[in-house]
Length: 343
Image (cartoon, rainbow, N blue to C red; front, side):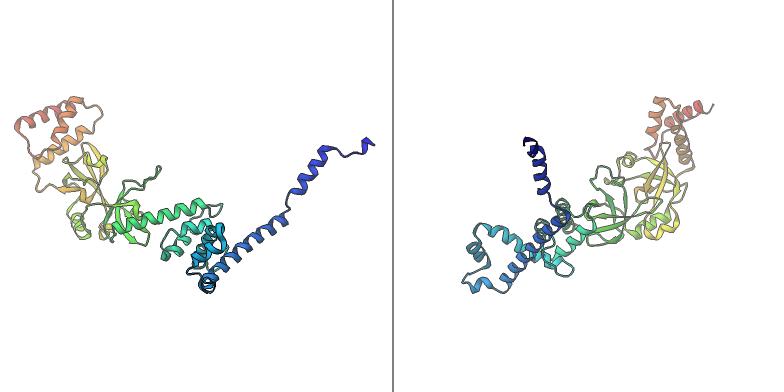
């Protein structure tokens, strides 16, 4: 008889198996939950909008919620607000399909921004779908953009610097001109030979002081390859460019003339023996340089471009780079250095 008794392990396994839902049961349970939410939100909206609370002698909907639902009134009030938001952002006014937590974050924005915010949430949702974290980050981003928009308006043709604050951004500190202005995003044309168009959020761009389009085109037309210029970068420029402020150099390359109409362009300048790229507004022409001055610049740049230059000689030559006039003694010293490396 003992052999016919059920084994304890098998009994436990049978209970565990019976407690698991089938896919059909799980789907039915989900649908019932959704139906419950749809019903609650719709009824709450109707109770408020048709002033059912007033018919029961309450002075407000909130007083009705507290009096009738007690401890449950807080959750039901959140569902009521969720219903208001959902009806406005749903394509066909569906109620009860979006989690209340998602709608709670959307509700932190002004009502006129609810629809645009939800559109942005759906457009930028991760592959796994809309999550609470993604909604919260999107709302926070929109709020910060609204602050940035109120602080500065962007105008076509303005110069800006990219500052994304992202750790791996390849665009930070690059400069360009505003090419398109939208509600939350600004398109700029980079100040390089590619002229690439890129879109950034408003708070990822900082205005910089630079000539307007007309003035920049004058600079474009005035500067030619071979011209001597001095470097004068604004404080917004990269340090790798600002470190040459006050130095002179020779224009070795201009950006293509097809971009002159946009006012955007770059120059390559031979300065301290290196080829450095600058915006056109970063340089100032040296007017009427003498043949002697041109010869000095050519010799100094050639010497500083050498790898075998003595450190003391390099320091002396770098002293010349920031000067526009020279004494006879200085010219004699330059000749000595030039002769020693020309042999």
